[in-house]
Amino acid sequence: MTAGKNEAGEGASLDWRDEFNDSALETLYRRTMQLQDAQQLRYALWIIAGIFLLFGVADYILLGASVELLGLWLIRLVVAFSCLALARLVGRHPFQAHLPKPLNLVYFTAITGLLLSILLHPGSVGLHISSVAVSSLAIYLLVPNRLPWILAWNGYLAGGFVLVAALWKPLSPGMLVSSILILAFANLMGWLTYSRLNRLQRKQFALLVAERDANRKLQKEIEERQLLEAQLRHMASTDPLTGIANRRHFFELAGREFSRAQREGTPLAICMVDIDLFKTLNDHHGHAVGDLVLTTVASCCASMLRDTDIIGRYGGEEFVIALPQADLETATFIAERLRHKVTSLRLPMLDEDLHLSVTVGISQVEPNEARLELALQRADDALYAGKARGRNCVVVAGENPPSIVVRA
Image 1 (cartoon, rainbow, N blue to C red):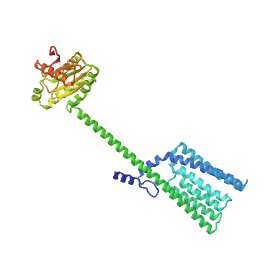
Image 2: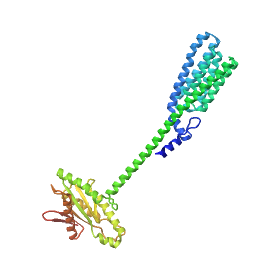
Image 3: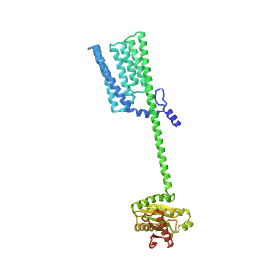
Image 4: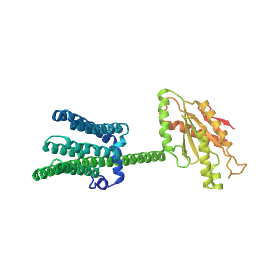
């Protein structure tokens, strides 16, 4: 956890511009903030345009109908029009809020218009200093831009004001120094406020990114753990060689069907399947061939069953099948199909005259029977009766007579 925090802290470090040292993180931040910055820029441009136009009323009161008034109004209209044009452009294309050319063009127009209006405006020097100081703060806080441009435009504003004050509206040395100090203080406060806000926003963004990364990693770990648990459940319930249910899982599934059959009074048949002469085949051809035979027969049996049927490996070369909703006649039909299918199997490593075969013992769960094992035992007895009678047959367990042999 500490390492994660350290990585987040390193990635969130800022340079003198109050931007991320990590260029990729800075790009992501700016892309994330694009819509918010575009909205902020539009509001700021509307406010600036409105203020410039409203000051036209004050100009008329101070100057009356005069050439100076027309000049001021023209300046204010140009500034307001440029602000509204950029606001419209940003409204349609928010990415323009982060492009330097249109934004800096409006900066130049607005600051130049403000400086020219000082030349034509008859107001006091104090009024002009106040307007320049407020404009300086607005550059830092209202109109989103990168810090180097903000400093450059504030330098242009302050330098332009000092030049205008020195050449066209001469100030006493004390007033000039006071003006410079006021502008310097306004820039200092604006820079500190800008820095604080930007650092806070970027720190919060870095924490959000780190939290999302941590959540993604956690989600990935959860998915991997769920996959591992599913694999473990599959391994715990599946016979690793044949891919069908192992003995424990078969009894778990068959036990549910047994309970349902007893509760609802529906038939449930049990089949015990044994590969004939498997030990001899295994001894003559080796365990690899024996394993292939087991896998092939298991797959063949599974392919002959219904979706609701349950097959599992009982042990060695024996398989056990539960057939829900199947009486003895249905179970016999399914077992016969299964037996015929196995006899038609051909494996290239076996001699042509050597055919695989199975013996199947069938029983049915009796009403009110207490345990599934009783039906399994009857099916097992029927299976051994079939093996004693020559194998490759289906034997149905019954009370009277004890067994019925359905021969090939």
